[in-house]
Image (cartoon, rainbow, N blue to C red; front, side, top):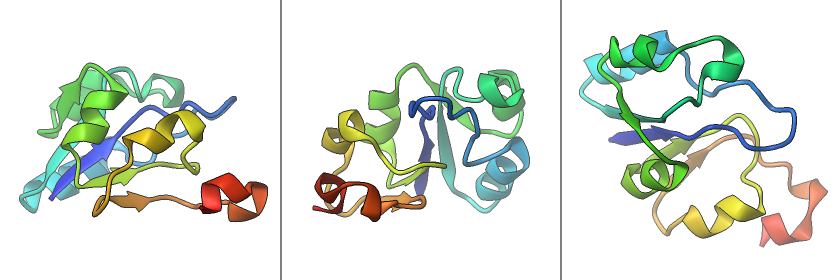
Length: 105
């Protein structure tokens, strides 16, 4: 499986859905992990920490979303991310559907 981790873009959200040890666990089990460049800076990790695990750094969120079979996020996708989702893609996150009918749809 190709796993993608884009940078969280919701206001004041600096957490990340996957730390280097998690990326390493996926890679050693044969998965490919794509990380958006700089996605981890707000949480104190550098891109190099992920490269060392075998993860691949991609330059943009669009590139991560396009390549991944599963997207890992901390927060629900916000409106600018909705067009990036595609049929059959797994979105691994907590959805806060009560916050908006549009997201639910």
